[in-house]
Image 1 (cartoon, helix red, strand yellow):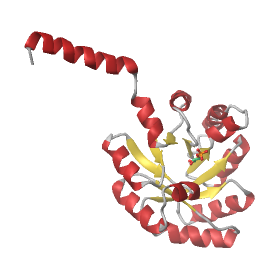
Image 2: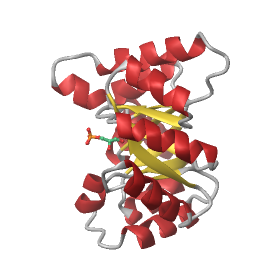
Image 3: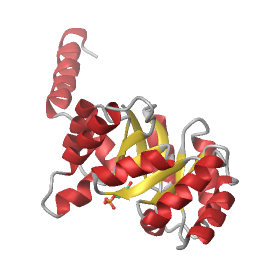
Image 4: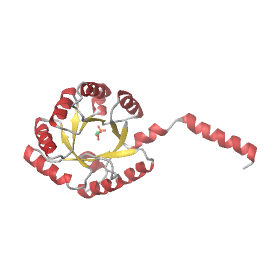
Length: 218
Ligand code: G3P
């Protein structure tokens, strides 16, 4: 499973990339607002140079099939590795199929059901983003949706849409996404740092250093 950073914060992306485990970035209008980004285009261009080999998702922020297609075409020109986020709606499906014909890659976002994921794949989405944490928030098991989408996609070898477990809130989400075989999980840097942490690792380092010092005197 690959790990993407779910943020528009350039400093966090630079920090995350140093770990050597990040292979893409996903953004959305709320993340752009949280990061205080006022120029979305410049931010996406900069992120695209930080991770030139990985997909960088940027979301359309207009409604209506025509305007969404037009904006998606413009965003696709920002960088060669940009992927366009389109919502899981009827209009979104029309947009996805039009963009797929132009070889513009789409990350179909705001997915909350297997049916939405199936339709997105049929329309030609390169990625589907089930929002795990937001389903948990309303008392459902968000990760079950990821597992179900993977099961359905696995039934059809002609489907090559990759599943991005999104709206990841804690390390256990990541474990379940990997166990289910999700292609990608996208998450905040905070969750990646939590994944690294284990108290026994810290205790072990302290003990090793103390033991070495006691014999070497250094
Ligand atoms: O990638 C989707 C993600 O940004 C949504 O996360 O935490 O706002 O539900 P959240």
